[in-house]
Image 1: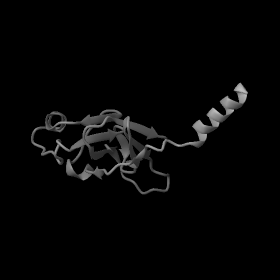
Image 2 (image 1 turned 120 degrees about the vertical axis):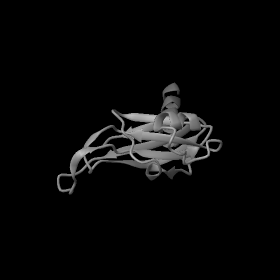
Image 3 (image 1 turned 180 degrees about the vertical axis):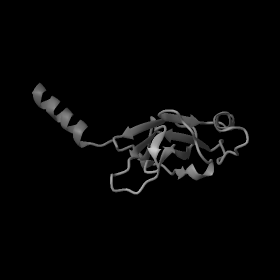
Image 4 (image 1 turned 135 degrees about the horizontal axis):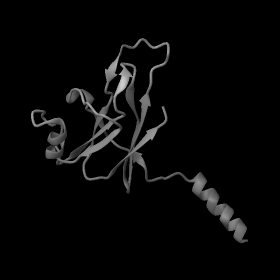
Length: 139
């Protein structure tokens, strides 16, 4: 009897997805701030204008109203050509916070790219007030 209950419990955990997770309205603001030179993998959340300006410089205007939005910067660090990019796979929310799944796109041998150091990144506008988690999915 106990073995049967354990099997049912395991089946429920595997078969029942997290019904509370739902998509989140987000915007890609990557083009609004210009180049971002990061030396390594970066996942940075900006909840205030001051945090944004400390990182980007006081001469850059914030692209959001921080009373309703927050900004997430995701960057893999410097790369060797123009063929690299950061793709946003999904942005979902549940009671624990916002989950952002991203993947680094790497160039194929047949892609026409230019050699040189580049700094791919994404700057996302998300609803304010929630914790944000980043899941880097394999290349």
